[in-house]
Image (tube, rainbow, N blue to C red; front, top):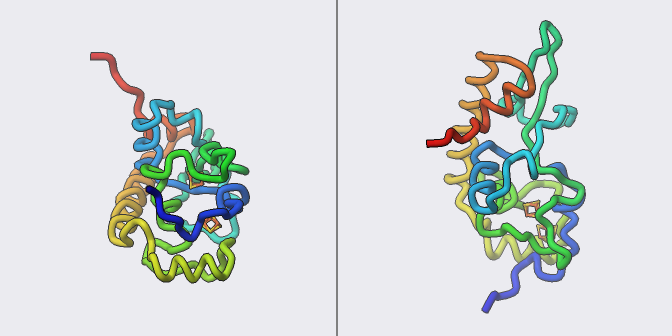
Amino acid sequence: MVLPGPCTGCGAPCCKEYLITVTSFDVSRVAAETRKPPCEFASLIPAKILNLDEDTVLECYEGDFRSDFLLALNSHPCIFLGANNLCAIHDFAPYTCRTYPFNGAGRMHKRTLCGSLRLLGFRFSGPSLSAGEFSAQLKEYKELVGKWNRIRGTKQECWEFLFPPCKEE
Ligand code: SF4
Ligand code: SF4
Protein backbone atom coordinates (compact mmCIF):
# COMPACT_ATOMS: atom_id res chain seq x y z
CA MET A 1 0.00 0.00 0.00
CA VAL A 2 1.33 3.46 -0.90
CA LEU A 3 0.76 5.91 1.94
CA PRO A 4 -0.39 9.41 0.97
CA GLY A 5 2.42 11.96 0.92
CA PRO A 6 2.58 15.76 0.60
CA CYS A 7 2.15 15.48 -3.21
CA THR A 8 -1.04 13.41 -3.06
CA GLY A 9 -3.82 15.21 -4.95
CA CYS A 10 -1.58 18.09 -6.08
CA GLY A 11 -1.84 19.22 -9.70
CA ALA A 12 1.98 18.99 -9.94
CA PRO A 13 2.69 22.57 -11.06
CA CYS A 14 6.37 21.87 -10.36
CA CYS A 15 6.44 19.33 -13.22
CA LYS A 16 4.42 21.60 -15.54
CA GLU A 17 5.92 25.04 -15.04
CA TYR A 18 9.56 24.57 -14.14
CA LEU A 19 12.43 23.97 -16.47
CA ILE A 20 14.00 20.84 -14.98
CA THR A 21 17.77 21.09 -15.24
CA VAL A 22 19.54 17.78 -14.64
CA THR A 23 22.92 16.11 -14.66
CA SER A 24 24.18 13.71 -17.30
CA PHE A 25 24.12 11.02 -14.61
CA ASP A 26 20.38 11.61 -14.14
CA VAL A 27 19.84 11.32 -17.89
CA SER A 28 21.95 8.16 -18.24
CA ARG A 29 20.09 6.52 -15.34
CA VAL A 30 16.67 7.39 -16.77
CA ALA A 31 17.79 6.21 -20.23
CA ALA A 32 18.94 2.87 -18.83
CA GLU A 33 15.75 2.34 -16.83
CA THR A 34 13.32 3.44 -19.55
CA ARG A 35 15.38 2.12 -22.50
CA LYS A 36 14.83 5.47 -24.21
CA PRO A 37 17.76 7.26 -25.86
CA PRO A 38 18.71 10.48 -24.00
CA CYS A 39 17.74 12.63 -27.01
CA GLU A 40 14.14 11.45 -26.63
CA PHE A 41 13.63 13.17 -23.30
CA ALA A 42 16.52 15.58 -22.67
CA SER A 43 18.10 18.50 -24.54
CA LEU A 44 20.80 21.11 -24.32
CA ILE A 45 18.80 24.30 -23.91
CA PRO A 46 20.13 27.88 -24.10
CA ALA A 47 21.29 29.03 -20.64
CA LYS A 48 18.96 32.01 -20.46
CA ILE A 49 17.89 31.65 -16.85
CA LEU A 50 18.54 34.63 -14.61
CA ASN A 51 19.45 32.63 -11.56
CA LEU A 52 21.57 29.66 -12.52
CA ASP A 53 24.52 27.73 -11.22
CA GLU A 54 27.42 28.90 -13.39
CA ASP A 55 29.26 25.63 -12.82
CA THR A 56 26.59 23.71 -14.76
CA VAL A 57 26.83 25.88 -17.89
CA LEU A 58 28.25 24.06 -20.93
CA GLU A 59 30.17 26.37 -23.28
CA CYS A 60 29.89 25.44 -26.95
CA TYR A 61 31.66 27.01 -29.90
CA GLU A 62 30.99 27.24 -33.63
CA GLY A 63 34.26 28.88 -34.69
CA ASP A 64 34.64 31.93 -32.43
CA PHE A 65 30.93 32.15 -31.71
CA ARG A 66 30.09 30.96 -28.22
CA SER A 67 26.71 29.68 -26.98
CA ASP A 68 25.98 28.54 -23.43
CA PHE A 69 23.71 25.60 -22.67
CA LEU A 70 22.17 23.74 -19.75
CA LEU A 71 21.18 20.08 -19.75
CA ALA A 72 17.44 19.81 -19.10
CA LEU A 73 14.46 17.48 -19.39
CA ASN A 74 12.03 18.19 -22.21
CA SER A 75 9.45 20.04 -20.15
CA HIS A 76 6.31 22.17 -19.86
CA PRO A 77 4.97 19.77 -18.82
CA CYS A 78 7.74 17.25 -18.22
CA ILE A 79 7.35 14.31 -20.59
CA PHE A 80 7.37 11.90 -17.64
CA LEU A 81 4.34 13.43 -15.94
CA GLY A 82 1.39 11.02 -16.15
CA ALA A 83 -2.25 11.98 -16.79
CA ASN A 84 -2.80 11.41 -13.05
CA ASN A 85 -0.28 14.17 -12.25
CA LEU A 86 2.12 11.59 -10.84
CA CYS A 87 5.70 11.07 -11.96
CA ALA A 88 5.98 7.95 -14.12
CA ILE A 89 9.67 7.49 -13.24
CA HIS A 90 9.53 8.34 -9.56
CA ASP A 91 11.97 5.66 -8.32
CA PHE A 92 14.81 6.76 -10.61
CA ALA A 93 13.80 10.37 -11.38
CA PRO A 94 16.45 13.12 -11.57
CA TYR A 95 17.89 13.94 -8.17
CA THR A 96 16.55 17.49 -8.28
CA CYS A 97 13.01 16.05 -8.61
CA ARG A 98 13.50 13.49 -5.85
CA THR A 99 14.77 16.19 -3.52
CA TYR A 100 12.30 19.00 -4.30
CA PRO A 101 11.15 21.16 -2.51
CA PHE A 102 14.49 20.81 -0.70
CA ASN A 103 17.73 21.95 -2.29
CA GLY A 104 21.01 20.08 -2.59
CA ALA A 105 22.02 21.26 0.87
CA GLY A 106 18.89 19.72 2.40
CA ARG A 107 17.23 23.11 3.05
CA MET A 108 13.77 23.97 1.78
CA HIS A 109 13.66 26.35 -1.20
CA LYS A 110 12.42 29.83 -0.23
CA ARG A 111 9.99 29.94 -3.15
CA THR A 112 8.12 26.76 -4.07
CA LEU A 113 4.96 25.88 -5.94
CA CYS A 114 3.72 23.64 -3.12
CA GLY A 115 0.86 24.88 -0.94
CA SER A 116 1.55 25.73 2.71
CA LEU A 117 -0.09 22.57 4.07
CA ARG A 118 1.93 20.43 1.69
CA LEU A 119 5.10 22.21 2.82
CA LEU A 120 4.25 21.30 6.39
CA GLY A 121 4.04 17.70 5.22
CA PHE A 122 7.47 17.96 3.60
CA ARG A 123 8.93 19.48 6.76
CA PHE A 124 7.67 16.40 8.58
CA SER A 125 8.75 13.82 5.98
CA GLY A 126 12.01 15.43 4.79
CA PRO A 127 13.52 14.88 1.32
CA SER A 128 13.27 11.41 -0.22
CA LEU A 129 16.96 11.52 -1.15
CA SER A 130 19.80 12.43 1.17
CA ALA A 131 21.39 15.85 0.66
CA GLY A 132 24.79 14.12 0.67
CA GLU A 133 23.90 11.85 -2.25
CA PHE A 134 22.51 14.80 -4.25
CA SER A 135 25.47 17.08 -3.63
CA ALA A 136 27.98 14.30 -4.41
CA GLN A 137 26.36 13.73 -7.81
CA LEU A 138 26.19 17.45 -8.52
CA LYS A 139 29.86 17.86 -7.63
CA GLU A 140 30.80 15.04 -10.00
CA TYR A 141 28.67 16.59 -12.76
CA LYS A 142 30.27 20.01 -12.27
CA GLU A 143 33.67 18.38 -12.68
CA LEU A 144 32.48 16.86 -15.96
CA VAL A 145 31.14 20.25 -17.11
CA GLY A 146 34.49 21.83 -16.21
CA LYS A 147 36.30 19.17 -18.24
CA TRP A 148 34.08 19.92 -21.27
CA ASN A 149 34.60 23.67 -20.90
CA ARG A 150 38.34 23.08 -21.14
CA ILE A 151 37.99 20.80 -24.21
CA ARG A 152 35.26 22.86 -25.96
CA GLY A 153 33.55 22.14 -29.25
CA THR A 154 30.20 22.33 -30.97
CA LYS A 155 26.84 21.65 -29.33
CA GLN A 156 26.69 18.25 -31.08
CA GLU A 157 30.18 17.37 -29.81
CA CYS A 158 29.14 18.41 -26.33
CA TRP A 159 26.15 16.06 -26.47
CA GLU A 160 28.41 13.20 -27.61
CA PHE A 161 30.85 14.04 -24.80
CA LEU A 162 28.05 13.75 -22.23
CA PHE A 163 26.46 10.68 -23.81
CA PRO A 164 29.03 8.67 -25.76
CA PRO A 165 27.35 6.33 -28.24
CA CYS A 166 27.37 2.66 -27.25
CA LYS A 167 29.90 0.65 -29.22
CA GLU A 168 28.90 -2.76 -30.59
CA GLU A 169 30.93 -5.62 -29.13
S1 SF4 B 1 10.85 13.57 -13.85
FE1 SF4 B 1 8.99 13.24 -12.69
S2 SF4 B 1 9.17 14.56 -10.88
FE2 SF4 B 1 10.68 15.26 -12.38
S3 SF4 B 1 9.64 16.90 -13.49
FE3 SF4 B 1 9.33 14.99 -14.63
S4 SF4 B 1 7.36 14.18 -13.92
FE4 SF4 B 1 8.07 15.73 -12.44
S1 SF4 C 1 6.48 18.94 -5.03
FE1 SF4 C 1 4.98 20.49 -4.39
S2 SF4 C 1 4.16 21.37 -6.30
FE2 SF4 C 1 5.21 19.45 -6.81
S3 SF4 C 1 3.61 17.85 -6.81
FE3 SF4 C 1 4.54 17.88 -4.75
S4 SF4 C 1 3.30 19.28 -3.56
FE4 SF4 C 1 2.81 19.66 -5.72
